[in-house]
Image 1 (cartoon, one colour):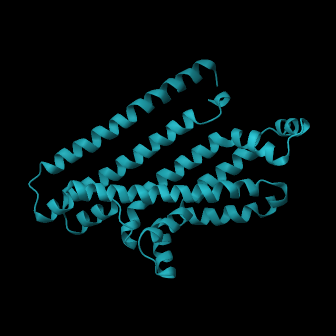
Image 2 (cartoon, one colour):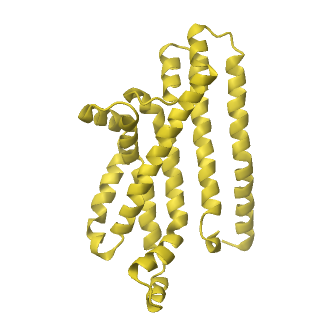
Image 3 (tube, helix red, strand yellow):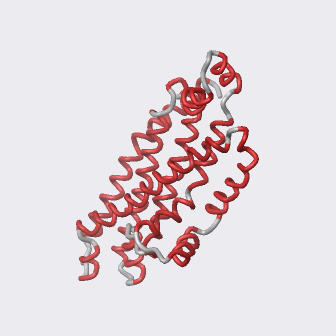
Amino acid sequence: MTAAVARQQQRSDRLRLLVQPIAVVVLVCGVLVWAFAQDLDSIEKQSLTASSLLSATWDHLVISFVVTALVLVVAVPLGVVLTRPWARRVAPVFLGIATIGQASPAIGVLVLFFLATGLEGLWAAVLPIAFYTLLPVLRNTMVGLQGVDPALIDAGRGIGMSTGAVLRRIELPLAVPLILAGLRTALVLAVGVATLAVFVNGGGLGLLIDTGYKLARFPVLITGAVLAVGLALLVDWLGAVAETYLGPKGLR
């Protein structure tokens, strides 16, 4: 990539970081103004109160961020372990399991987990969604660590670093950009799939979408859908900000 192309890409990324949140605010506010301006019946008024919208959005955020935290706690350490020489033989097994989770329909994973455990509520949604979104973080962690130049690792060991110190001070910092990219993908997936939590009494914006669809209340349906889209775009923007400013300074 030439210097001119790189500068153009940087300007494009910065413009997107500026425009995307503004577009989300305009979209969500516009739809809310439109919805509240409609001649709502009693059911629509009950669903489209400020408290119900805030409660559904909060539940959706809780599901999404608990899923992301769980994926981060599981996938990054697992990715580190699977890139060690003594564990590389079993890496395809774990990657295969994670691939099965994401290749399966999300609603199928949720329903099968519910039928197998009988759980309802937050954890009935969080655990299968975490399994569904595990692959991007696990794979990116492994690819990031495997992509570290062996000469840098040898140099670290040559100046007396232990294996753990090389991992903490060389391998993981260099893998951070790819790990953040995988985490961003996982978070956006979690926000999208969290709309299905309604089927296991997990709450979230899926409740508005489901209510609006089943009862043919289109203001409720459209409001729930737009809020879910806006939330996904917002967390994608937060992920882009993290990728831009949290990676190693030399790689930005």
